[in-house]
Length: 128
Image (tube, rainbow, N blue to C red; front, side, top):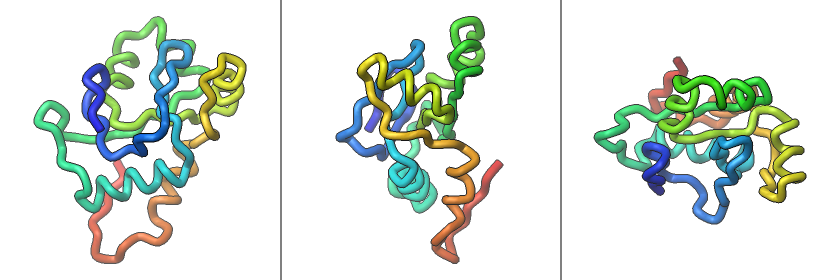
């Protein structure tokens, strides 16, 4: 799936909305869905776009939400990210208050180890 306002955003569950919270578009996915999306990218499930030859994931927390309004470099990085995951529990709580419910917190610190569990042995996988 490609969202013209946010760079290349391929192979995400299409049933999930993308709530805007503190002006940040956050993907409403669970940890399992995020893991599956990244694995699909690694295994070549979705072609790269010429405009965005690299996919990356950002994991906003409350500190990022505060800085987002003041830092153009952060807004640029987020707008070009292939996946934006709510790393902070307060973001998930706020999403419920504002009626744009995120399913759960998806921390980068949980996403990285989850990628290595059940990995296909012959698949090249680099975390940088």
